[in-house]
Length: 184
Image (cartoon, rainbow, N blue to C red; front, side, top):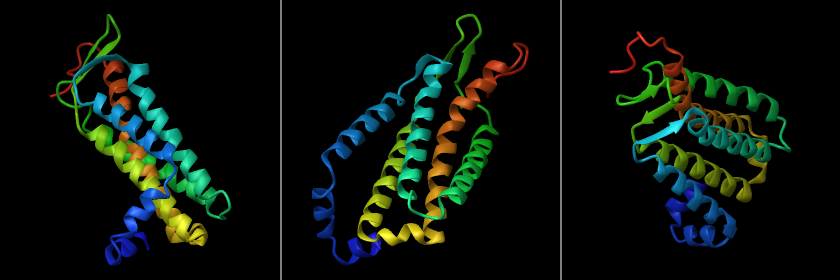
């Protein structure tokens, strides 16, 4: 409905943005800063590498629980979310860490090359949540429709799993024996 509304009436975008609570724009700014920080090569501990993934997973779960709190699709949606997380984590870790990633076992720190993908994934999660919020504000009964509810959960889960694959790859790299080749 949102896509059709904006296609037929692009002027509605201004109304939607004006009715958005101010804190949402603060959250977007913080998320953009988090994503921008991942553009440069960094040396970091595994805990610091996993913190954004945990934060975005919690944001994803909170969004799912809030959006489906009054829906019979919450429990099945959680299962869909978990399945999507697992599948995307598996796919995201199959190739190992990105080229240029390394682990120093003495300091237990990683060198992680910068990438635009974390920023894009963070923005995708935010705009998925924003779009769903607008849709549900316009049509609250959408949360009762299985196709909407379960596809929303799959989207949140897929993006969460994709984002979580990076720190999981780092953990795999650190767990390798020193004589095992790291990454290409």
